[in-house]
Image (cartoon, rainbow, N blue to C red; front, side, top):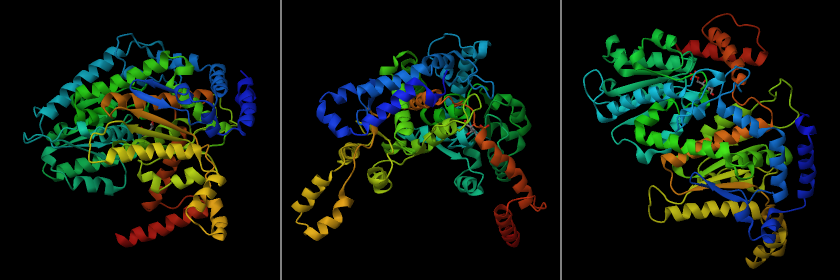
Length: 550
Ligand code: G6Q
C-alpha cells in the first residue's frame, strides 16, 4: 500500500480541496434545496445532519474512496471478530462483545468464546446491584447504603461519571453516586466529608489494580473507614473491586465474592460497558443499564453492516479527516445543548486524544500528516459566552458537533425552545457568516456614522464556511446515550484506520508516570537526580516550602 499522503485517493482529495477553496458552503445550500436531505441520515434514534460541512457529493465519493483504499471495511471486520488489532500490546479490542445482544461466539484472537463469561459476570453484577438498590445488601450495621463512591481514574472514571451525569433523571432517589479520581487529597477529603461509613459503599475500579492514584485513594478511604469505626472484617461489605487483576485485588484485602472481573481485551477508555459500569448500574438499575448496552449494540450493527456512504461513524470520521488534513483544522469542539451531557466533552477528550493522539503509525514510522484534533467543549448555551468568538472569527476552522434533544427531561417554561433556537442559530451563523456587504447594510440601517462604520466594518464580518455536525435525538434516554457513545467510539476507530494508527494503546502516558517515581522520592527528601534547571528549580522551591509547613 502506498504511503497515505502519496496514495491516489489522498492526492485526489488534495486536488479537490484546491477546487473547493473557491466554493462557499452558503452557495452550495443556495444551489441545492435538497442539500439537507442529501447530507443527513438517521440511525439508532440519532439524526445526523452533516450538510453544513464544506463538501459536495464528489467530496464524499473521494472520502469513501480513501476509506476503501485504507481497507476500512477489512479492519472493521477484524475489530468485530476479535483479531489482536492492538498490536503493540498484542490484544484484541472487544468492547463490542460486552454489549452484544445475540449469542454468536466471539473468540479473541481465536481463543474460547467470551460471551458466556461476559453474561455470567453481568448476572452476578445484576444481583448485587439489585441487592444494594432494593436494600437486601447492606453495610456493617444492616442499614441501607446511601452513598456509592467510585474510586478510579482515566477509563475507570470518565465514562461511568459521564453516564451517571447524563442519566440523572433515571437515578435512584436515595442512592448518591460519587466519584473520586484525582490523587490530590482534596478530592477524597471533600467527598469523605459528606459520608457516613455505615452507609457508604466504595467501588475500587482499576483494570490493573496498580494505578498509583487509585491505590492511594483506595488505601486512604480504607484508613478512613477503619478510623471511623469499621473493622477489617467489615471491609468486604464496604469495599468492592472491579478489576482484571484478581491477584492484586486479593492483596488489598478484597475477596473474590466482592470482586467483579473484566478482561485484558477491554481497553480502559472503552470499559464502561463492562463491570466498570457498576456505578452506572447502581444509579439507574440493571434494566436501564441493559438499554444503554442495547443502544450501543444497535450502533455496532449499523457500523458493522451499513455501506460507508450511509454509515454514521464512518461519515463522521471521514468528515473529521477532511477538516483536519485538508483544511488544517487543529481542534474539534463538542457542544451539547443538553446540560445532562456536561461531562461528554471531558469523556471524549480521553476517548479521542488518547486513542489517536499519536505521531507514529502502526508500523512504527513517523507520520507526515496531522492526526487527532484537540477535543474541547462545554454545554451550550454557556459555550456561546466563552469560546464561540474563536469559532466564528478565529483564524482557523474548528468543526463543531452540536448535540440536542427534541424533548427536555425538565420542561420548564420556555427554556427548551430558547435552548434549541440558540443551537440552530449558532450552526447557521457558523456556516453562513456575514459578508462585508451585509454588515455594511446592517450598520447603515442602525444609523452608524460613516467614519465609525468604516472602522467597525472589518470586525463585523464573519467569513462563514465553518463546518458543523448536528446530532439530534428525541430525548436523552439510556438507549440513545448508548448509541451516541458507540458512535463516537467507532468514529475514532475510523480515523485511526485512515491515519494507520493503533488507536488502542497509550504509550504516551508512560514517561511522565515513570519520572514521577523519581520526583516523588526527591520530594520526600532523596538527593535530587540530574534534572534540567527548570525541574530542579521547581523541585527545590517546593521542597523547601513543603518542609516549612510540616
Ligand atoms: C484508558 C487508559 C487509562 C486507564 C487509567 C486507569 O484507556 O488505559 O485511562 O483507564 O490509567 O487504569 P486502571 O483501570 O488500570 O487503574
